[in-house]
Length: 458
Ligand code: HEM
Image 1 (cartoon, rainbow, N blue to C red):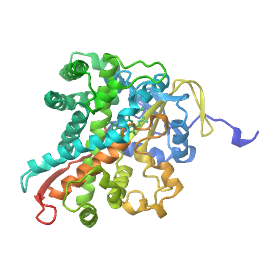
Image 2 (image 1 turned 90 degrees about the vertical axis):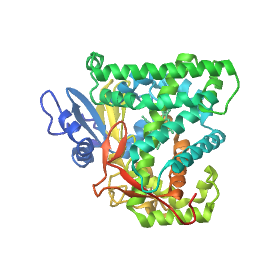
Image 3 (image 1 turned 120 degrees about the vertical axis):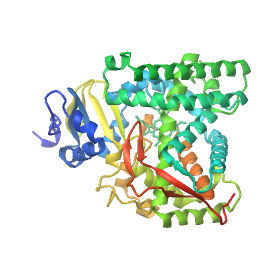
Image 4 (image 1 turned 180 degrees about the vertical axis):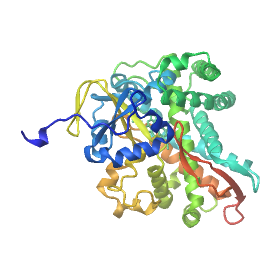
């Protein structure tokens, strides 16, 4: 028999305990655990089975296989161990629904992310970042992850709801959102339904936050329905969009699920990526200076616009490198809709599949000296095919991030706006390391801001 055609069962990761499997190792240090699988059995085979408690989970470790599964949503559908927790929140939204619904939902929402709209959203983004920069005091110490998540929540809620009375809605969502994320994180780590339905304070707080957010969104939808016109924001775009095949618009319940899904997908990712970018720039002052030099030449001291980003190639490379080292969604999941073969391995129907963008982005075969920050690896003549294949911060295929252009625009815009006003320095000598929450966050990130006195002072 031709060995190339042999289909085998994927190997099991070593070190599983009888009931707990690898759960304790995953909880203790998730990044280390998954990195070890990538270097160990997974490096040879491309697929390795880890156990989350008694549940077998197929970890895919090769970028070509990850691309293959992302290109085949009919077999490797959205779902699995980490998506289940998000579904308790965002229901059947575009970010969580199975492939059959996704074919209908994605084209309905896509117009909300046209380039023309992104330019409008970026005006809001720049205004929010500018207001934040003006609110700080010289020498102030800031918890930068919190600040960036708050800013991201403001940007996302203000691009979602732009009406004059909706500032309060945005603030209420920003207040409730951290409770929702904490609950979501618990559900992702421990996907056991009965634990989360017990009358514990954490569960009660989570339910209250979810009900509160749903009420706010519902109120906004009713206000918009009363107004009738397109306000140029995300909610308007979603309300005016119709199914190209049937002409049907989204119902109120569908809209609420989409908005919650959008908040979940957008705020944490954008806030964490902005915090990482600030951390990396202040840890590399020469790169920071070069980015400022580029800004001076391309923009001078007039307000920054989304259109300027095309003239800031170094900032773009630094951002690509930050997303490589610290992809906010570091682990993604899928579920097989029937028996499948991947990389010569048999995978049963209904199996959990996971893949780690963090580990793929640190594979030395695609990225020489993978732990080194090197924005110049993104210079056009240095980008290899292997590097392109393994770099997936926004995913790929039909489920690629719908907000990728928005994120790629908003985050450099925010950071460049803040950087022109302030110098950022770490407040303590403590090492900043990735902390796994809903996304990958820099921790601890306490920074002191000093007002710039030269060309960019406000
Ligand atoms: C740095 C910023 C961001 C990163 C790194 C990021 C990353 C990702 C990734 C990796 C996926 C694919 C998940 C999967 O395949 O399972 C995704 C999906 C998604 N993202 Fe983003 N995202 C970012 C910002 C945003 C923003 C700003 C929005 C909206 C305003 C957004 C909305 C969504 C939605 C709705 C999906 C689901 C798309 C679908 O399944 O069709 N994201 N994101």
